[in-house]
Image (cartoon, rainbow, N blue to C red; front, side, top):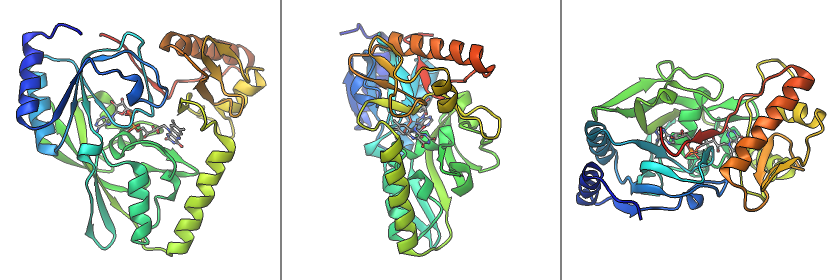
Amino acid sequence: MRELDMNTRSLLTLAEELECRVFLDEPLDKHNTFRIGGSCTAMIDINSPDNLSQLWEEANRLGIRTMALGNGSNVLFDDKGFDGVIFLIGSSMDKIYMRSDNVIVAQAGCPLLKLCRFALEHSLSGLEFAYGIPGSVGGAIFMNAGAYGGEIKDVIKFGRAVDREGRQFEFTAEQMKFGYRSSRFLAGDELIVEGEFELPSGSYDDIQDKMVDLMGRRREKQPLNLPSAGSTFKRPDVEGVYAGKLIEDSGLRGFSVGGAQVSEKHCGFVVNKGGATSGDVLELIKQVQAKVEKDSGYLLECEVRYIPYSV
Ligand SMILES: Cc1cc2nc3c(=O)[nH]c(=O)nc-3n(C[C@H](O)[C@H](O)[C@H](O)COP(=O)(O)OP(=O)(O)OC[C@H]3O[C@@H](n4cnc5c(N)ncnc54)[C@H](O)[C@@H]3O)c2cc1C
């Protein structure tokens, strides 16, 4: 167990007063889809937007290193863990409701799957693309998650977030500065509280058929039986060029470093075939980037976010 400094202890006391669950030395491998990583100093299970505001303000005032974690489906933690406090924004902050006939509000910890099913129940279309992306609403806004021609930026009307002083703001889609797998939130100055999604009415059956179809395509093409963080690399910014194809063309299908492997099923995925360390994944990524660049001239940029032990 790590020794807690006075400031961290004071933050955790406040969290407990606010009735958030606190975990010390929490193993991170059970909080990410790669199933990799040591433990963090502490984890706070955030239970409301107001408590998120209060705790983040306090953490910043005390100079404590923190990070937000949703479903952990786009992160690679270090084997040593995370020297700081993780704000888990998940199942304790996952409320969802209709604001009006065509507008859904979902808190950051709400799983995308739940949001998609909620949209289906109300015969609202536009979120079909997101069915099967294993993230939270917060993580999806942060990354501007997308698939099969759709992106979060196409369906979100407002995002609400809290800044380092604990103030809550509302941002329009434009103000969130969405780009390909990016948003204003990558700068790290605000944590996402909730998203408001405006969706046109559609036919329940059509929406359901599309969701089933897209889920089927995922199952057919992606190595869902092994831990991973989805597509490891971003798509190069050139029409018709795909990371997976470049990797395949470089002869790297199945290429391994320790327990990390370029998926046999989909070369765009690095998988944990068993016992992979963060070092294995990082080394594999480095070797894939070098070989692909040498063969094709494209430098593949990592989509998965590596979180170092300390800064
Ligand atoms: C099998 C598989 C398939 C996938 N398919 C797709 C796909 O089709 N399209 C796609 O875009 N992605 C895909 N992904 C990647 C991933 O699911 C998405 O990027 C998802 O949006 C990440 O959400 P998360 O909650 O898991 O985020 P996390 O991994 O928990 O976090 C990702 C980043 O967001 C930050 N963050 C999380 N929540 C908040 C918050 N509330 N406020 C501020 N920052 C926050 C974290 O600090 C971190 O830097 C896939 C992953 C897997 C494992």
